[in-house]
Image (cartoon, rainbow, N blue to C red; front, side):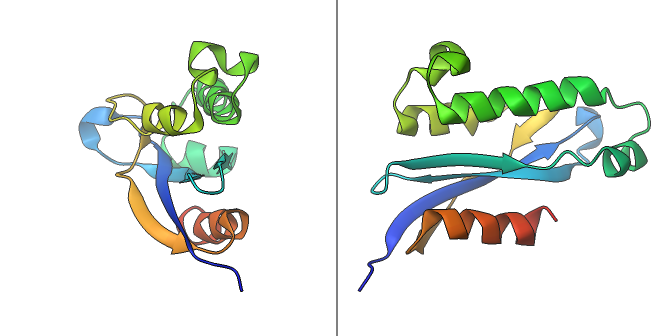
Length: 127
């Protein structure tokens, strides 16, 4: 029987005008220490983002999301942060920021399979 594993996740959102505090969810990061699992999935739907804010710099948003993905994956492509252990990368990725790309509060849960849990959260919170 598979056991439940503690995981943490945060929703990644685009907030084009920080002063208005309006945002659109675009991705989810999930970290499960016991499974040594850290993954970020996102969808930057250009039509939705332009409808949300017509002056958005979509190329900058996409570049930032891809940078988060590289940091999450780790290794040289993730720069200095990419070389840190998964727990440190997760904490860095979910730190509070006042920028266009932001993370929600970190939420905990239990799962048997972090990959399927990430997909389920993505479907519930982004799509």
